[in-house]
Image (cartoon, rainbow, N blue to C red; front, side, top):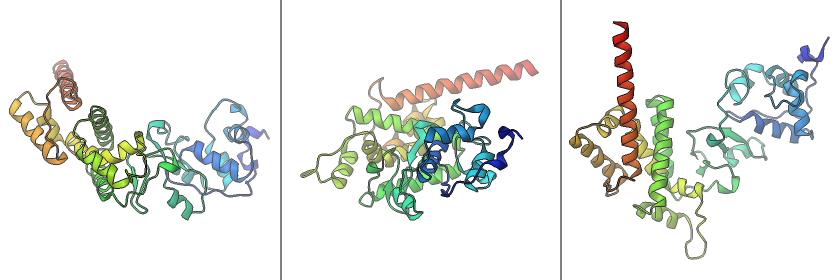
Length: 293
């Protein structure tokens, strides 16, 4: 019997490594190799199968199941970046290191890299997890509005289509980052920085993870407007009065004196791009309808 056709001949490794929901397959293989003192490259090539050696292919689920004693279906539904059914979900921009406290409770000491675009904070341990470094998993117990933002984020995911929420969150994050870079409406952001860090004795580490953390409440509040069919329709309307109602809601939810004073305003740019996309979609749908009549 050829080895390529004999997954049952793959020997089970001595150390069984637990699966973590949404963990990337590369992260799991690193933990598996380390626990069993195996070279990662050799393990990855072996799990891909003889015909796939050195081709940087994902492991074959049946071979990984035979080596780890985890069921094939559980491997496929738990790990991301493995076939089937999660091909294409492993995106570096949406990966983060799982809460180190959650991992420690399961006896895991190595970093666990997970794919999740909607878990930015661990509510169980009050840790910021929207980062790829464990030392940037800040304790958010002094910033209760960050934890509230994660709960509101969860409600958006339950209420709207996942793809729409992901786009709204991404757009809002970029808008808040542009405002931050331009120094606009810094009061709440600076208050959270001052609350979290001892500004008299500690230099504030202003990097992407910290900035995103202190902007997170506004990111989620703005996302609630951008993903809402009602508010996004007002925002992209040709009627200035409807647009002004949208601006009033932005001011009320974000607690900022927002005014689209320049053509370079990122929120104004979002309105223009979204309005153009909707006009294009409407024209395409109308064209398709006329062709079928």
